[in-house]
Length: 270
Image (cartoon, rainbow, N blue to C red; front, side, top):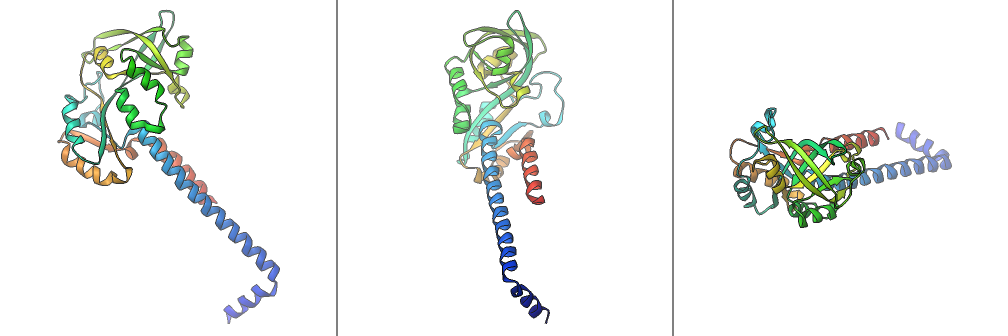
């Protein structure tokens, strides 16, 4: 009975029914389109985060994850090449390479700034980053491994450019003060303004000389395909010995989840 009354009411005013149905259809179509676009954004941001920043996995010592370092590389990885070789045996793994980050002071003689230094192997970073990074600064550092790449805003603050000399000062792994004179080989644009003001990049070999240690802070593990993440994690758990901590890109990247949560809340409201 109720169904019959409802149908009669629907067809009593066909124009109103048609307009209402059209509004619902358009609204649902737009919402589905927004959800589809959000999934594309999620995929793109995931791949960009992995290839340009975190890698698929990051391996550190367990002490590094659980304790506070009093000295640079106090809980770093010794003999990282041996561990990288074990990890690379997994056919799903494409790249394994070290990264080390430390703070110090950068000076031109006339002006000094606090600096956050990233020590990298440029060729490996290029292979991992692919289309997701600006490879030019890494190429310059690869050709001149004894140089330094500065954030564009840091270079502007120091009033230096390519070919100019700077000095980076920091403490060694033993706690002593050390400094190196380096030539600026390129600048790099970092999207986060505050990081751009403090960012410098040097080669792993230069960092070893500056820090007085062949330890590294972490290993970056890159896969051939992100879809193999779960299987690769099981393989890493077997190949990496006790005493190390393995984190996925999702565990490392907080900003990815913050951005996605904002989008999902917005779509949920709609």
